[in-house]
Amino acid sequence: MYTAQGTINRDSLLEEHLPAVRRQALSLQVKLPAGIDLDDLIQAGTVGLLDALQRFDPNAGATFSTFANQRIRGAMIDELRTRDWVPRSVRRNARQLEEALRRLEQRLGRPAEEREVAAEMGVSLSEYHQLLSDTNSGNLLAFEEVVEESGEPEAGPGAPPSPFAALLDEQQRAGLIAAIEALPERERLLMALYYQEELNLKEIGVVLGVTESRVCQLHSQAVKRLRARLGNG
Image 1 (cartoon, one colour):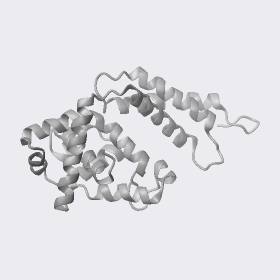
Image 2 (cartoon, rainbow, N blue to C red):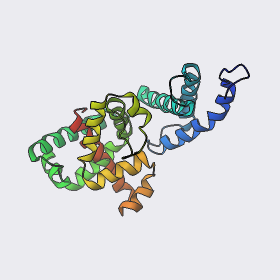
Image 3 (cartoon, rainbow, N blue to C red):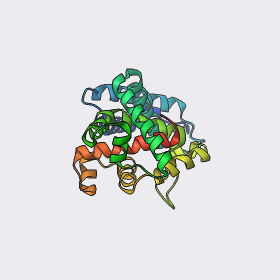
Image 4 (cartoon, rainbow, N blue to C red):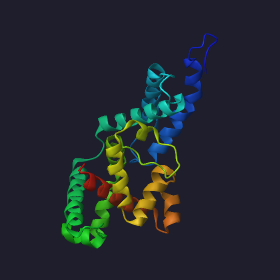
């Protein structure tokens, strides 16, 4: 949107994209613990939108919507990081689980099965599943960090590159894509449904034929495999 003088009409852009802030906040909130306030996410996202209005360069090639959506989401993630809402015990357990996965998969040369990881950690299968559930709350940011460092995988052959992929080093992006391709088939499908198709946990459960809580466990396990393989533990 431009004025008669050919400059960007920031007021119009702000009004047009404010609903996107709420949509992104709602999308993010469903993946977070219950204590995260929606209004706080919206406030952070609005700051990100205002920042986008200040920084956007129409000659850079990207559309304003693409640029703004990155800034909005990035501002929300930054807000969550500053709160350090994941308890230390959860972070510690997540690191131990990732280390166990890394050791085991290096030794086996293939994705480890759940019973094998449980045995490596010296816990029962049910205790291992509980660990996955307990540590899943921190995995959204964990995967965001993986994406920021390595690039978001492209949707498939013929698909346009994502905004992340266009900006990031090809070798790093290739590493993430290879790590995702090395996941067990069900976990690979889950990641595609969650991050590319943006299905919620209940919808993914229907596709996979498992409960919502089981989807959480599989998601947790998939992210930990990625972090273990990429060395981001």
